[in-house]
Length: 638
Image (tube, rainbow, N blue to C red):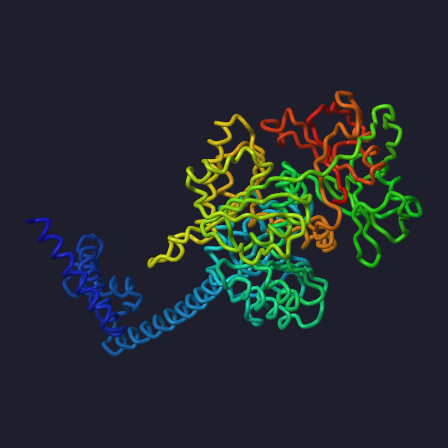
């Protein structure tokens, strides 16, 4: 009962205080003055009466109390005639009002400035920085890769503009990116589709501008509007590299028109479809791309031709001990990957290499390390028809089918299992030349459906994201994004596929598409399995192109079925199995087949070894013993 009375009293006091505050400034000042007098006057009287040196008369003590009150409340406390006391109090009140107003103005100005900075509306005064427009999960791998790319620079900056609270952006970035090195990340709040707000991150003086696609169906339209706003904010063509990404292939042409001739627009659907197909037919290829696309290991660089000018491209392959030569960058900006070994290197050409850093591509002739006796000539392999299985169906599935049709041998078969059986979203037989496709209705998360397929009998299995229609079309909105729901179904499917593989005591050739790299860590699959994580892959591609614009053409050829691309081929087709040879010997053997060797993968270490047995760009003088089942990684035509 006493507790209820205390609570009721507290509520009544709070209610009266709220009414007091609602009464306005005058009421607050009056009550504040009364409260001060109630406290100060009795306290001053106690001090005066307790002081032994105070006057003994009542009038003297009252005067002393007045002096103490005046000094405490900063109203003078002067004594004398009534007119003198009144004038001193008036002057003290005027002075107090002036000081209070001055302090209030200064405080308000500082608070306004702090709020402006907190809102992120001030202009970034940087030059040579990287601008990131938009906010999505891709911002974290983009910022992380940019930090890694700028690790050897004395000073660098990343300016992020997004319609999000500045402090929230900074907190999220600091949480996800622990070590920023010497790179400063500056966040600004604003609409990326408003040219006046784009100025806040100084795109005119930037070295690169990255436009991230927001989540949702309208993300591509937002990218197009951002590119148009960027053209309006920076009407004249500058030196900045503009890189954007759209998800839907149908919006690719529109975005390229908005980006202008100097812009680079990546199509997520197209790139993911190509990589899924390449990796499905060559297990382990995703690990090669992971190694080459991020800035942590070896990546693409260009070096001057120097004394190699006028010589054949094939001679350059053994002219760098710690770098792998893979192509030429011509003076007009054109890129030639894996050109004919007899191609003449021009004086203005630059040599494209895979190296640990831009300063590790040092000339060193290593032709003497080639062991001629170990080189073999493999018999040509007869292409055979393949049986492939595609589990799931989404927007980019038709492009996967089209890409498979360009790679496989005639007579190959593709079985598609999806929630809804149909014509495959436009994949008609009239558009296919080599591949026969059969569609089957079924839930890929249902183990009974998978058990009927005889999964181990297929040469390769591809699992792609497929959203649950119950979750995405129900009356209540889903709590997760469509991509997250698709990843959830993919994880369930992988769990059942692992059980099937263990029961059959066979390792499945499995390639999986996911949207979130965090979900890949949860995947119930063998270590070193092939995962194509769309969000991270596009992020690192955008970052690579922003640092070196010629890489847009390099990646375009790598992902194209018509050009040169990476292959994992049996090492026994190049050198004698079981013999210890230098890597330079492997490079020379590949050169004679018009290929560029860039590394190898040891089968014995593939499941559990460091980097899953993968070695990119080893020293050409380094010796290795390759056995049956090991692979040589080469850049070659399809």
